[in-house]
Image (cartoon, rainbow, N blue to C red):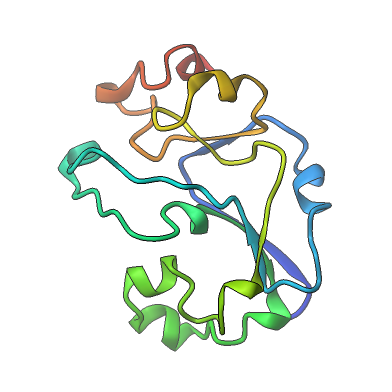
Length: 147
């Protein structure tokens, strides 16, 4: 994007069920980025395929972002390639949390983590614990897996 305009980032384990234009309309120029500000404190020590489940502040915030590219100039290829995952996930490249806005409307529902009743109207489902495209996870999310 050449540090201009806006971009959307989303993890690859998501299913968008709503109109992405409604997400795009939430851009606010006074923020460097907007995200869903989950309070996800994992209880499990391992996630899908035996990966370590790491609890940290802002868990899953970076999995869906509206990025104001002109305010993200610290995200150079060198920084992204050398910073720790936690530095990136915690947005340590920003000058502070005041640069982070909130995405509203049920976007980025964490399947198998958040209350399944909330998923009914969620415009975006996120299988952060492993999705039904894996044989071992065919039923993850119950009826959501069929989607």
